[in-house]
Structure formats: structure tokens, C-alpha cells
Length: 471
Image 1: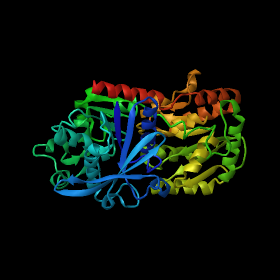
Image 2: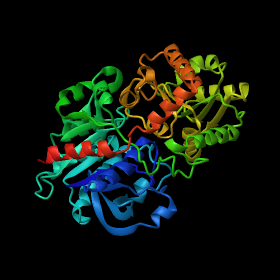
Image 3: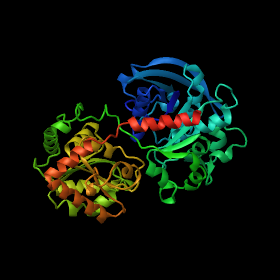
Image 4: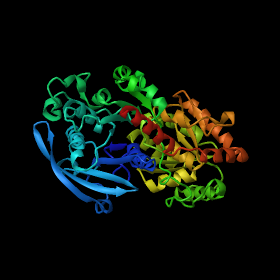
């Protein structure tokens, strides 16, 4: 079986969020199960120079974008046993950053067409093209409406994964003729609510639609979570399923991670205490045995930051320290900056994103707070478990699937269900009580570290899905 993984970003070449982690880890996990998997993504100008130097030129072709024909170069790189293809067009991709440009619709329309156009030229004909989020949602649309009549493409299947339904690729209807260039009579496939909606087209045309956790696949059938697409998803529930993400155990491994202060394992937990002490030192906090609550997050509303803001000064009065790394909305950045100045001995803040510091927070904190309003899967809670840092989460999306409350003596974290600041606060108090019981908390820490959140079971679930649509 051969899988071509189409994505707008992949670690370590280009990264803006969790999609890059998945794109870098899932194909590698599939390869370990003897599934031929390769990745195709844009050749961004921001790809690190040392990675570009490892690439080789494959070919160049032209790709139709409605009435235009655009240059498309193809480069190839090998990493961790996976072959990556890079779609080159300097007009579209020689820019700072990945997204947020006025012509993103045209850029990713070009990329989606290029994914299909390069297949005869790379010596790899996939059984399944696995597409991800709105940037590749047009691949199933183009395949079914423009390529299936060609015998070469006729038996290729598609899977479309929704990583975050909030971002759908919604644009004005003028794009339909000037950019998409679909045949006459196809407008209804991509039209939704008076707009061109890339994700809607992908949902309608893909053979299977997946989300990144079972809970999220149910949640997005409800208006509260679906951002307007619930009616479409309800029409296609027969092809919708949820498969929880894993994390790359080669990247997130406290025994070998060279970004943390001191490596440790379940058997050498005393070394985790060294990470805590060094984290406190780096963040300008007293090196004491109080509970350290970490957060690595975007400072935006749907991450539950408004809940934290509401009760922060109540919590900070406890025997506790907070460490937060992130950036986002001005309201929250300003609030936490003010709090860091008001409580310098109890709160360490770093605005922005620092991957090295992120690893140190995972390794050095005692508790990890994720009170999200919605969370399709979430990776931070999986990483925190791996590093023996106990998550405090709201029961939504992948958080609900991967973290179970330890109140029954069997769980691996602390959870609450209502999106309410005081429910969150009460759960933090429970977690602090748990931390005070050093013997019991050590048992919980070991239980967390022994959870298996690798890509092993998730990759097996995807393989089963691929086989189902290819049979």
C-alpha cells in the first residue's frame, strides 16, 4: 500500500502548529509498519538552509490554475526513512511565514493541483492521497471532478483530515472561475453559505473524512463546535471517523531529549526535580518545593485563557508558582505581563514561542494546565504526560480522549467538564492537594509516564482505514 501525505507544513521543514507534528510523525510511523508513505508540501522560503542543502531537484512541470499555467519545480529530500517532495514556485512560496497572505486561496489551489500533477513524474503512484485541513481540501475535489476520467488516476482514493474546523478556507464566489477553474456544473461542490468553502468541498469529495480525536468527531456535528459546517457533516457522517493523534517518541523522550536540563525516566525521577529547580532558576523564581504549574499555549480565548485570567489572582495566592510560555491576543498578553510584574516571585512569563523553553517547561513543571474551550486533539497534554507532568484539562476533544481524572485512583490527570472559571479553579485546587501527597503524586507521575501516546495505535487505525477504502 502506498500513501501520499499532502500537507501545508511538516516538522522539521516548516511548522506553525500541531499539523506539522502530525505530518512529520505519522508518515514515519506508517513506514515502520511497512506502508509506503511519502509527503508532499510547499517549498517555502523559510525552510532552514541546512535542510534545503540536502534536497535534490527532481523535475519541473507547469500546473494549471484556472486559465493560467504556473511553473512547478519538484525537489526531494529523505529524512527518517521518509521521502519528502517539495513544490516550488517562488511567486507563491518565496515569502516570510506560511499563511496570512491576500492570495492564500490561489497559493493553495496551485498546491492542490500540483499534488495531482506531479504524481506521474515522481515514480510513486499512491493508493491513497491523505489530505490535511483546508489548504489541501481541493485535492479530492480536483481528483473527482477533473482527473478520475484518466485511467492513471481512476483508482486513487482520498482521506481528508480536519485538524481544526475553525479554519475552512472561505472566500468570495469570484474565486470560482478566476482561480479554481473547475468544470461547468461543479459550483455546488465548493459553494456553501454564499462563499467558496475549500473544506466543504473536501468533505463532500473525499472517500473518508477523519478528525484528530473521537470526541472531536462527535463534537463537530453540533453547531457550538462546527463553525457552520454541522449540516454538511451530518450529511456525510457515514464517512466520518475520529483517530486520536500521537506524538513522536523520538522527539519527545525525557531519556534522550537534549533540550532539557537533565535526562530522566520513570526509574530516575529524582532527575526530574533537577529540571524543576533549573526551570525555576531560568524563569527567575525561587527554587523551592512548591507546585509549579506550566502552560505552553497560544494566549487566545478558545484555549481557555479567559478562565485563567478570571481566577488567576485567587490561584496565585496559594503555595504555587506559574510558568507560562506563549503569545496571542493583546488583552491576555497585557494581563499576564502585568501579573508577572506584580508577582515576580510566583510567576515566570515568556511572551512568544521558544521551542527549547517549551521542552524545559514540560520537563520541569509538576502540573500542566489546558482549560480549552475546544481542542481537536491537543499535543501538549500528551507531551506533559510523557515527561511526568500531570495535566489539568477540560473534558473536550482530544483532551477528553487522552486524560482521565485520577479521582478513581486509575486516571492520569485532573479534569473538569463545564467551561467555567470556578470549575477550573476547583480542579486546580484538587491537583494541588494531590501534589501535597508526595507518595500518591509520585504514583500518579509514574502512571502518566507509562501511558502510551505514541503513533503506534493511531498509525494502525489509519492503516485499517486505508485498507477499507482500497478494498
